[in-house]
Structure formats: structure tokens, C-alpha cells
Image (tube, rainbow, N blue to C red):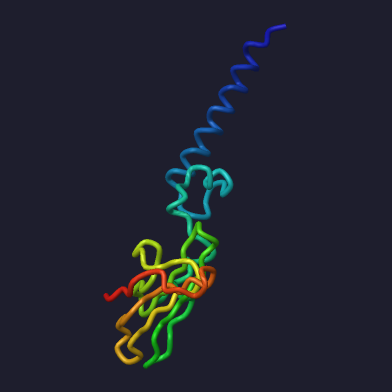
Length: 138
């Protein structure tokens, strides 16, 4: 029994089928060919995401502030690992990067009309209520 003849026919049919699939993916528009196989060849950048990235407003807020209001965000720290942050009108007033925060209460004195930082201090509640840092003028 000779299998060489039928094996050649099967190999030819598989080759023609794979060639047709690849050509239809590469040359065919959207909706043509096999959509599951097209997903394999498409780059992730070209695919449209279902949910667009949420827009961030001043100080990383999820929605904009009304007219004649100041955008304000305060984030507490985590022990002595992550320091607190105070942001006003997209300007960081206090953070561990600026090195003007400490343990206890962190207070920023701000001009309510212009939003300018007047003074920033840390009040150490654990050490008996002492101001631990000199005032920071910016």
C-alpha cells in the first residue's frame, strides 16, 4: 500500500489552506478572514480598548473643581515609610520629596486668595507637642 500519493495531496491542501488564511489576514480588511486568527497578528497598540483612561485633573482629582474654587488634595502617610502629601492647585506644598514633612500633624498655611504657601511645619504629637522643624518659606 502506497501512502506517498495521498500524503502529498493532504500536504498540498494544508499548504494552500494556510496560505489562503495568511493572505486573507494580511490583505483583507476588518471583518474579513478569521477574526480569532487576526487577533494573533494584530499588535496591542492597534486594538481599541473598551474603557478609555480616566482623565486626571489638578492634583490628580477625578473631576474638575468649580469656578472660583481651589483644587486641594491631602494624602496621609503610612507610618515612617511613606510621607504625607498636600497638593493645592497642582502644586505640591508638602511631601517627603520636598523634605518638609515629619511625624505627627503636618500643617500648611496658605493664602486663601492666591493659593501661595506661607509656611509649612510638622507638629510632633508623640514628643509632647513640639514643632520639630523650622518653618519652611517657599
